[in-house]
Length: 246
Image (cartoon, rainbow, N blue to C red; front, side, top):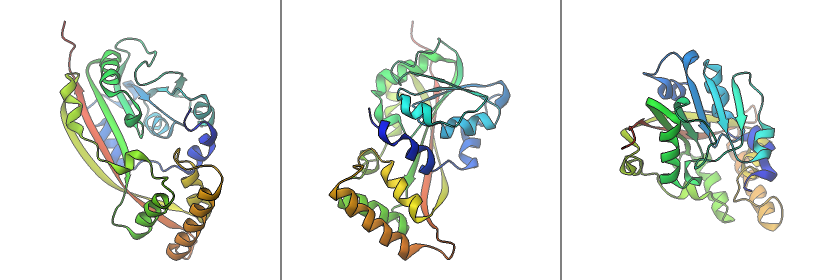
């Protein structure tokens, strides 16, 4: 299973999400303390913990046991084994479904029907991605380093079409928001970030080539404190649940 051998790197080196993005996900819903959120494809719980810290009860659904085990515990996050297509959650059990950095792994029409099933009436779907800048020199250099070993993640090579979601008839009302975000990295952080990517080999000539390129890249861009910032645009896509046709 993807990420099983790199769950610890994922938990340690992957970026978080800006507070404004969490505000946008929750805006217009009931008070967070009254919400139940299903975070599907939860990985190591980066988004789940941010939502829990706002007071929500979070049902974190993740099929990879290594990723679940690497998650930092939180009293308001409950973990279970499930997928986007089969969450294992009860019908109409949640007010909000979130998917962060994982929607591209799903069979999307099947997953959207599953999300419709587990959401209550008036429920919301939020899909979130940190998309790396194509303008910032350090961030673009990271992209080029991955491309040099054919290790760039497929999701970074294309664009997401948010109109694909309402075309299934399960959700409506597409809203697209974006937020600037920067993630400062030491040289070791940068190498760990690269090794957390499922398309980057853990060892071998390609890996050594990549690490060499990244060490040089970081040395050229590091500030006096030894950090260089990966620049992202955090994309938040929101839809409203459509009642199933009976």
